[in-house]
Image 1 (cartoon, rainbow, N blue to C red):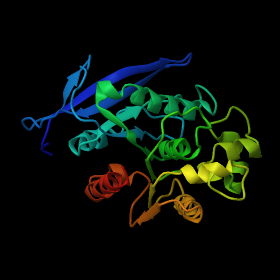
Image 2 (cartoon, rainbow, N blue to C red):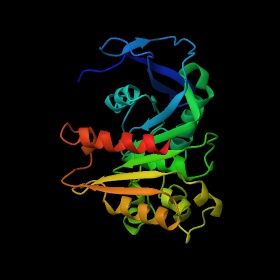
Image 3 (cartoon, rainbow, N blue to C red):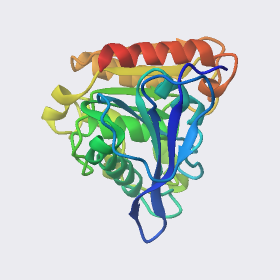
Image 4 (cartoon, rainbow, N blue to C red):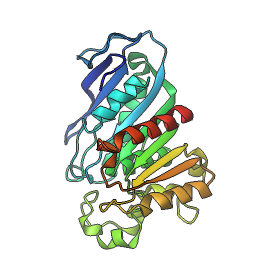
Length: 282
């Protein structure tokens, strides 16, 4: 697909060194003013920018908390930069490397690392969005809704979850709790509540009552034919957010499976839907 502008791609920037692995980020910045059409230009030492700041979109990849790496959202991030956003993918430790809450703490640190470098990347710190798929949607919405529970300092102004798991309290998850890769051992009911994004908006949970007021505008997308994560996960979170007074939109995508956001068939429409939501919300 021809691109109307160049994109500067800063790959494998070190966020921090954990005992288990080095956390990194790939950052995609619009190269303004618009240059000749062409592919992205890779740099190793990004220069300070004097251009106007731009909204930040942080992508969180999926993989059932067992697999996955930065690069899954490369197509999305390139297109986001073409749309005028600064885009980034951040890495996190997987379940076999460290138990929960390591994953969400890493995602929150990645978001803070990016906004701490707002001058370097040209980021508007008052316009920050998170977008995640599957396990990444779980982490993205947990970062957005947990009101700093896991160390996040940056305010999140919009959230998009695609094919996500948002309620781990459900009976089916408790029965399968021994195999959840987020935990070393069978998780307790309290642990399942703590790692469930819906906990932070449900009135009948132990969540902080102030968390509801801080929930950002949220878009939830789920394929109607998803055989990996039930669409009801997104529907129930949407209902909870709406009941809490949060601006929320839920789309059940017809004839779409678990990974529809990466399919050539669905991508153009989903891309338009997500970027339209982000422009309106940021």
